[in-house]
Image (tube, rainbow, N blue to C red; front, top):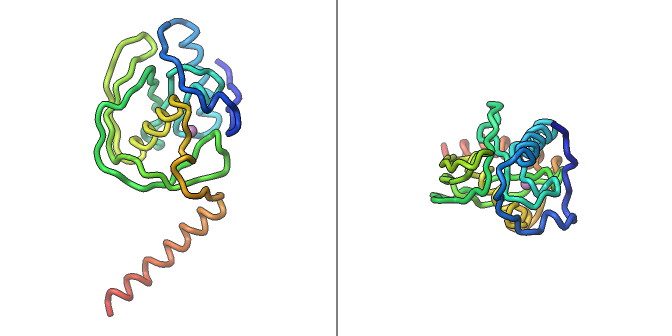
Length: 176
Ligand code: NI
């Protein structure tokens, strides 16, 4: 296992439509192990093969950041989705920035495991967001294409604080 370099915006690998994985061999297993180690080191919740320069349809998703479980998805596709929710999103390839993106509130995904067996999984909330974000990488797209603007960590913190301060104010207004 090895930690691979995460490519950042501007690298052509991030804009390519990825190839279908056809060989479920030791090389794929090595890639998946490296992706997991790289993701853990970076402290993210998802990582796609093109982010380390491999133009193949393979991603790692952490559906619940509270747990350490990582799901490997090879040749994934969204089978069904429901709802829509605006939420804050970031990407290891766009470090230090965040943006609000509309994503489904629930998705059902079909994918292959490292041995080539097909399986289905589903996720809601942050997990659904993560599935959509990572699958988009395989099409050569990144979340910033959906946003009006990106925010820095300081701006996000300021927005959160403002929200916290507004809550009691709104409450008081309602009481009148
Ligand atoms: Ni990303």
